[in-house]
Every structure is written in C-alpha cells, then in structure tokens.
Image (cartoon, rainbow, N blue to C red; front, side, top):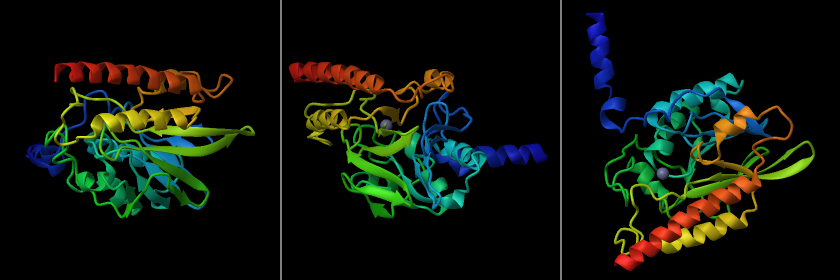
Amino acid sequence: MKKFFLFVILTCSPLFAQYTPAAPGQNDPVEPFRIIGNIYYVGASEVTSYLITSPEGHILLDGGFPETAPIIERNIQKLGYKLSDVKILISTHAHYDHAGGLAELKRATEAKLYASAPEIPLLAAGGKDDFAFGNRFLFPPVKADETVKDNQVLHVGSAAMKAHLTPGHTKGCTTWTAEVSENGEKHTAVFVCSISMPGGYKLVNNAKYPQIADDYKQTYKKLRALNADVFLGSHASFWDMEGKRKKMGSGANPFVDPAGYKEFLDDNQKVFEAELKKQEAAK
Ligand SMILES: [Zn+2]
C-alpha cells in the first residue's frame, strides 16, 4: 500500500507531469571540480552549471533541466560552499535544458536572478511560445529580478561575470566571460551560450524572428573578438569536458584551449553559412 501511494505521488508530481523531462544521458551526476582560478564545475554530464566563487559570495551560471537542480545543489555543497552564499544567479538562455532548474535554485539560494531583456518573458513563461519550439519544451517558470545589459559586469565581492549578448539561438542568448589568473598568468574564460540551430532553424523569412540570420552573423563576430582562452559553454560536449577532465593534473591546465574555441566557432559557422545559403537558394 505504502509503495502504491509513493508511486502515485511520484508519477503525479507536478515536476514530472507538467514539464519536459531531462534528455537521456545528459543529466548524469558529475563530481564537482575546479576548472581554473575561482571557476568550478557543478553541473551534470552534458548540461552545464558553473560556480564563480569569492570570499564574499558566489555567482551561479545556469540550472540545467528541472531534474539537474538537486545535482547542482549537492555539487555546491560537496565543494564546501553554502547555497545561501550564492548571491547572483544568471543564465545563458531560456531553454528547458539550461533554465529548467533556475526556479528551484532561486528558491534554495534566495539569489537575485539577472537575465537579458529578451530572455525575461521566456523565463517567466517557462519556455512557452518559443520562436522555434512553440510550447514543446516547458520548464518551471522563473521570474528575473534584474535586467542585464550587453557588456555589463556583475560582481559578488571579487567574483565577476561580464555579459555579452549573442542572439540567434534565442533572442537574448547571453555569453559570459570571466577574467581569471592561475600560476601568475591571466586568462579569459568564455561560457558560450549556444550557436547551434536545433531542429532546422528557419533563417530566412522567419516571421517570429525576422533578424535571425543577421543576429547569428553579428554573434560570430562578437564571439571571435572575445579573445578567450579558457573554453567553456552551456553544453559539456561543446568544449569536450570529458576528454579534458582526463588530462587534468598532468601538466598544463587542459581547459586553457584557445585553439579549441576557434575550431568550435569555425565548425559551427561553416554549418550556419551553408544552411543560410541553402535556405536563401530555396526561397
Ligand atoms: Zn538551447
């Protein structure tokens, strides 16, 4: 009987009933680890989350799927940090695999959520009326407390994250950078929002997003101009987290990878340009 009630509670739980479930293989737990300087990995196997720490408090980037939030919370605590010391919550973009856990993380940390103006309504709607997906990928709605502008730097003590609006994948897709130093060397870490075009994005005559192709073009220019050397992003596969983790502790920090960042941009831009050409020819 008890088992039966537990089953009913679990399967009827609003978390599982209302929202899009985590994609298989993307939400496996990962032991948290330090990437470089004050940047720590606290996310899952494919959907990422980062903690940027300072003695005065921390910044947390991205919340994964709804089911990722408990993994992130556990990882922060495993590192010896308190959830209540997270003072600012930020995100790359309002898709269910990165913003899904934000509502729970905001509740647990009581941090202020900052988002770019175009992402705020999509976060508040829990992914409803997405220009590409409609109502297909829904997540717990979350209210932003503050708007973050292009080139704005957010600070918690000595922890700082700079916002770069890189629209295309979503209208307010935000790439973040952080300045770090390790062994007396300065580095710029980049947390790429996303430049993919999932499920055949409409780049030409897109009534819901007319300037989409121009936005992608500007975004590529902007990402190249960042001159970042620590390559990170919203998906672990973007920056080969698994491959790089295996190289940790044997000489140079594997996450310093300016060539990998450039290659990522080159590869994606080729796909974008070919797709744009194809769609323009077909119009
Ligand atoms: Zn996305």
